[in-house]
Image (tube, rainbow, N blue to C red; front, side):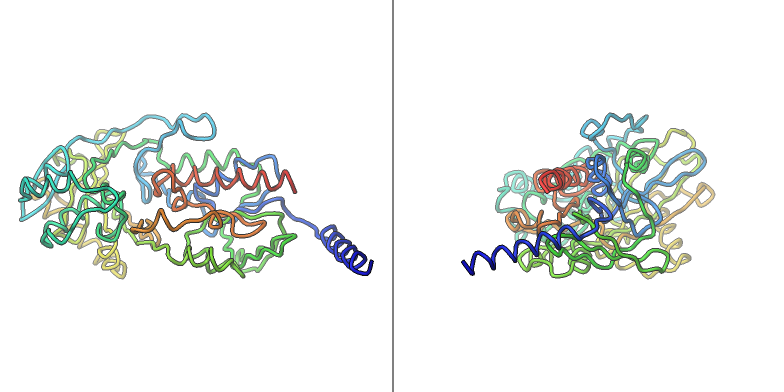
Length: 423
């Protein structure tokens, strides 16, 4: 009898405490990148708040405009708009060129496929056959390749991944030998982020950096700083879309198992230097890898204006770390040297109409050999009221890019919806 009475008092006290909690929101989304925006959109029937530390939405999707054209400082390629959670017309498309290239030994090698470029650069027939036949589970035996051949593979690998091909899962190593499209929406990819925001019922607060998240069981407490002022909200649930290293810093008392998994996630940096050229005479190409230069590769982007083309000088992983501390003058000098080296007389400084630069500290996740085997259910739902999202958690598709981020956000919103419905 005494045990029953004690259990009754415990349950009564818990329910009283639960009833006394005053919720500010049904859900809070941390991060207004594509994961956060898509998650908030799917929860429009609830009272929500989106907190973003930057002064814009979109995360690594960041478009800018110049003389009526748009260029990208973040995600470049066109996304599959038919997979969006709403009907949307992204506008006209500027297609990429079919020709690829490799700058090696002071000359430009052109090709239609990466393996063709590698063969022209000195790979043997046996090398090509080995690459084509390698097992997707075990990966390539890189020990049989000299360093310069691995550097050439990395040149094409870095077009889509930021790092050394040898560090990646065999499924992702294949990316070095695929031809990647560079079709680009003329309206810019940020227009999609703005479209998402315009459709949200949630309150969106920019320049709001979250510093602490704690799930108390019957509510979640989120602390953040806005314009130097510390604030706090109480929510029924929270969706955290920040990169794994940040997630482990801001979540208090994170489940040890989930924390261990997140701590194994490594992000590599990436930088891009943009040159808008007016009336350039450079022969069209898709992308040109430059393993011997300071840059990793150069991408040529066409625009709706035939007189303006955009050249993107990309710096992956170690190369981006090398230029991270460059001042503007040194960076500009390096970019000019790269353009002069690769395009010779077809390029001169008078063509430059605009330059821009962006450095992303956490640009791309390293999909290491155990990446797909590591994850367990707890990573998506580490506590009762907490859910995680982000392109690195789109394990069923391609863990990188706009679509991966959106699909991850949709998954997290579905689970949050079910939790709030049953709460």
